[in-house]
Image 1 (tube, rainbow, N blue to C red):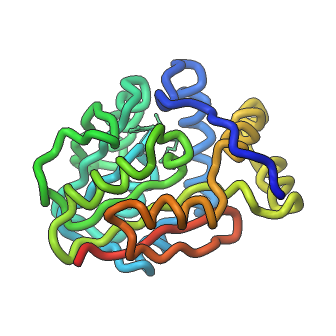
Image 2: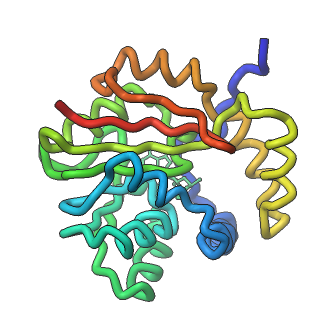
Length: 217
Ligand SMILES: C[S@@+](CC[C@H](N)C(=O)[O-])C[C@H]1O[C@@H](n2cnc3c(N)ncnc32)[C@H](O)[C@@H]1O
């Protein structure tokens, strides 16, 4: 039996200092190409109106936008401090993204507003993932695709150590440990999906985490 999940936060990343450090960390991940964008494209995410859930400083959606040139890029983010970084970064990329303050369990968008929904590294902070999955389904248009990637609690200790020692700046390492402890296992997330409107999703184990992908019928 593995360790039980330990909740990290239900409010996203709010602290200004942590947010600033997270921006440095996420930009380093972007520079190494460790942003999961190619996997999202391989899962079928393409142009049209794109929503990123929990964009943080925005690099994943912005890198994806550079490759697939969506009609629009919107982010739904619970932390005002993260939103400010995302807006600054989008301006530096020269991409006109629209970041909205909101909770993914009750998103401030009309039904069927988007062609694709993506999210990376955010799900382990969602208070009620089933509600968030149902919201993703609601805001997607018919035939729209989703791809949600996150850490996975049941990766091997060796892989956990690899992520730990490659995390820079070093001050981010305790946060990584608490995020790993808050992350779901593949079987936990498969069970949660079964009770949601994303029940047809395919869950795959990635090298360091997991990926939930599918299409709204
Ligand atoms: C670990 S960061 C990942 C940021 C970014 N997606 C990345 O891959 O670099 C998780 C982000 O999700 C946001 N978040 C957490 N819970 C949320 C919720 N319920 N609704 C919207 N955003 C949320 C956090 O504030 C934070 O910016």
